[in-house]
Amino acid sequence: MSAMLSSHDIARLRQAALLGLARQPLAVPEPLKPVVAAAAPPRDPVLTVLALAGQQQRFERTTVTRDADAVPEAARRLHADPRPILPERARRALLRVASGADKGLADAVVGAGARRVIHAGWRLHPFDLARLIDHIRGDVRCLGLAERAYRVLAAGADAATAPSLLHDEITPDNWTFFPRGHRVAFLRDQRRKNPAAARALLEGVFMAEPAPSRAALLEGLDVGLSLDDLPFLEEVAKDRADSVRAVAAGLLARVPGTTAYDTRLAEAARCFARSGGGVAGILSRIGLGTSIAFRPPRSGARNEQEVAIARLFAGFSVAEIASASGLTAAEVIGALPVDEAAIHAAFGERAAHDGDDAVMAQLAAARLEAAEAKTRSPAPILAWLADHLAAPVAVEFGDTLLGSAAFRAALQRFGDTTTPSAMKDDGTLVFTAAVLPAALVPAFLATITPLHTVTARTSRDFADLVLALEAAPTS
Image (cartoon, rainbow, N blue to C red; front, top):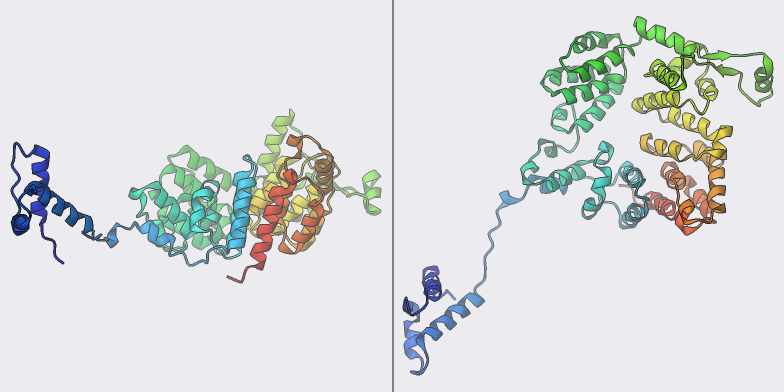
């Protein structure tokens, strides 16, 4: 049935009610005159009109016109992500990990969990992004299409048309539209595949970038450096920005085949020397030690020496040092003292940029097996592994980790403590669960069974996440 009163009639009634009937008498709308005339004489016409107008509005159906253009592009792209959503069992486990992780470790722990999810071929549930996004916003490995779309959508309507949301994945054709972190990671990945083509990508956009982006993108060339990169680096070394010139100078010193590189490599290689005599030689021949001695250059105070060693080994891989010194990679790693943090960091950084998970595992294993490791928490080593490995460790390394002196000593400390603060996991257990392959997770759970719930809760939740991802159907 069509409405008896038009919008114009309703507006006149409203105006009369606002002004007062004493100032503006109510004019009965034309469609209601027959109804008012038919009413009994005692009934007030004004009340009849107001009652009928109210009843019409009461039963009037409101029609909502949806404008397709009003939906932000970010919202569309969030749901256009082709990856399947994380299964419910794994989702609950990840949320428990996020809720139970110690505040100081939450970003690293949740990031490790999100990377396990993404490595398994899934994506985070859209309803959980509000809770998890602050923990993973700085890690480009955790930011697929859905996560990037959510970040832009949460930033406000002005950012909801960001060009990077139009692409499912980064490619050489669209890489300039992505945030800086994605671009640096993409450039390094391309350098591993084809250094010359990746350098050409950077050359094509370099001068159009602001100084912070130029410096960050230039650092992406540290993978696959060769003499072919010299002309570009020498030109960039004249950049107007100090930060860009500093990065270029550092890369020039790392180019293989240059005089600066060869001189520095020879000096670094001389730090490792084979010793066939003395006590060290005797112990090495019976399998109780190593015949490789590490003798770094001495230069003044301890802090000055650390700076000099860090500068000397910057950018070198274990393989390059081993080749220059006539040793194997295992011998070089085995000769490093546990407290030579600068060299461990240099080798680790190079292995991470090269995507060399095997070398990263070897570096960690050497530090975990050192005699000094029994008195130190292995949490920093395991956290570094969890942050840099592209995939879970091999079963062989996992067995080494679970049987290492450092891990066993940590279990003993957790088991002996009685104070609440000391019961809290310092990261040893949860990061162990983060790096282990699914095949070793049951053994890990059996190992931590005797520990207090306060100590082992988050690591058990992470182990449940790993097992749930393993049990989920292939995505």
